[in-house]
Length: 308
Length: 231
Image 1 (cartoon, rainbow over the protein chains, first blue to last red):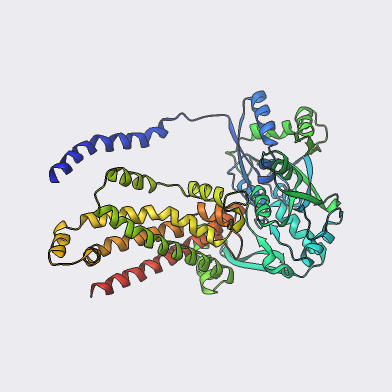
Image 2 (cartoon, each protein chain N blue to C red):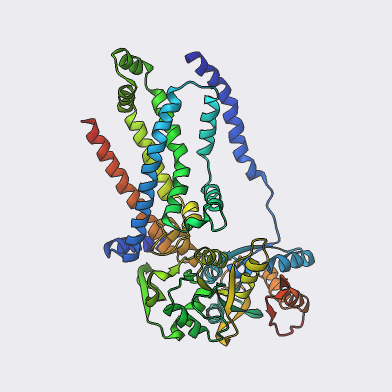
């Protein structure tokens, strides 16, 4: 037994050395240049549009873009802290504040899509064909059906809370008090009380909310692009249908904002600026207009023509 | 620095005011982790014994495989279980996905290898003379096993505490199989991931501090338990 152990130990020495050497390997990789970081929303990323736009931009300018998909709240936060060079989100009022506070250099309208309310094809809540989003939410609350909420402070979640407010359902505000800059600060979110356990707040991205709704045969609010991607862009598409659409309240504009070099001198403003201007160029706008998911237009170019 | 002090003060505030959401989250976390650790212990400790005491062809291969499974990423377990229990999977009709049961199943798979491997090593380290002496003195297999367990109890307990630590700290399985549904499957780690996603770092770190406190409590409890068993 002892003898065996010694042999083992002798063999172990080199093995450990090789193992440690392997651990060091990644450090030898070369540093790269001309890469910018972009924070965007999960709905932009999940829809697949960026997979068309970004490679084209890189081919043309040689600038590579690292994309970080998060909720709008986190994307804005990344911009405020200078973790990224440009943000591409959809919460117009908060974007305006972001620029006004000096974190963003400027904001350009890029495109819009719209939100739709989806649910199981059988439609137990009987909202099919409705235009009025708030009315549809009231019916969902009245019927014994489940509703999935993003619950992650994203643009979609903010929109959902606004529609619940408009619906006139009894709402409850839940606040968690934390300390921020040595002062008490409440984080709150609003949800309809009437649904009780049928209101499921999952705190995850759009794609996850869709699969969650599919699993639970529930209703949810989603942007059209991501929904198409998940329904028609896959072999095993979602078994959910668009049941309510067309309400002006469901309009969803996207904007691009380069992070201001005045707040964060280290950001790669020149490249970010180029990306922002490129997104509103005739060429990129055409790409956005042509982008189709299973033969359906998902985004509508919004940009005012800009002189290049 | 304010960021850290803010987080720390927020953690204290959350605990002090017995924040309702926090209590639910901590409760779910503890419940999931305890059930899965208990079940994995029931599976892992006996299998560890069996593997350690029996001689069979491929024993080394089994041990090597188990050691490999120690590095099992939670995401892989999540994907694997997901494929089985999603609506389109074999067990789709049971409506398991995004429930607490799903988390427990995943976590058991994650930590059975840990408990088994460490039981094997704990038991193998016990001097073989104990076993032989017990057998010579007329002990049957169960009684012999009890002697060995008495000798190996600290190491086995350590394995279980470690397994508990692994499940209470994991995020992949809870997120993929539990779905982070508020009040049902939101655990401390998925709550932290969510607050990070929202950009609320202070709350996220505060939750992290609470998690560490809870783990500390559990370890103090286990220590006390071990100390008593020594008497």
